Amino acid sequence: MKARVHVMLKDGVLDPQGEAVRHALGHLGFSGVEGVRQGKVIELDLAATDAAAAENEVQVMCEKLLANTVIEKYTVEIV
Amino acid sequence: MKAAVITFPGSNCDRDLVVGFERAGIEVTRVWHKETTLPEGLDVIGVPGGFSYGDYLRCGAIASRSPVGQAIADFAGRGGYVLGICNGFQVLTEMGLLPGALMRNGSLKYICKPVALRVETAESAYTDGMTPGETVTIPIAHHDGNYQIDPEGLAQLKAEDRVAFRYVENPNGSVDDIAGVLSENRRVLGMMPHPERAIDAAQGGADGAALFRALSGIMARA
Image (cartoon, rainbow over all chains, first blue to last red; front, top):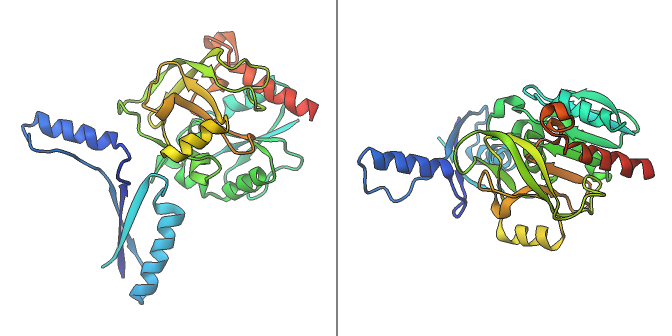
């Protein structure tokens, strides 16, 4: 079973990298980009067979390591 | 007086930090990140600058969960002194020993230069004897030194006089110009500037030595 974790900066936390990407898109002529937020995707290969249990475990992984919940939010998807 | 300086894979200011402590008369044991116990009779732990674990995932994230990480947290929990510099500051925020987080510099550039810092409080073992408002020059060398904390957290830091240093000219976008913060019990200090790179005139300035002398003085009196 695979799990996919999306980690994004929380709303309201300034994202300097996203801003830089937005500026670069503007330089390339994409004038309609009003905002860019950059995050990361983490894919996990799990031995678990129970989707609900796996999701719970990945939530704990997010809290303990994969996300810094001071500045980041996350979503877990079992695929 | 005994200090431990932790070395993670990718630490590169550990040796300089050892010299900083030693010049202030503090005996230093170097501790490898795989250790789970710390030397007996320790007064202070130094968490050095560098790129622990290659800054993978987030700066300081893997180091903060390393075997020695728990020992550092336990030591701090017992009221021990912990000094985290640069990547060490990032490690301490990732551990939750200090509030807030260090994000990518607002300019997105790595910045390496001496900067002027304003001492904001003398009420800590690291700034004892300094005068609030005085300016010291200490080098910074970081890509992710942009200190951020939510408005409630910032209000609490200010109300409790826990901002140790502010930048005179903000180089990285840190909220409220913050360069260094103290824990609630004032014994854990995290700062992005490198006092260990300013302990000898040959380095271009020795303002950083005052921090190690202050610590040594407090421990001698304890």
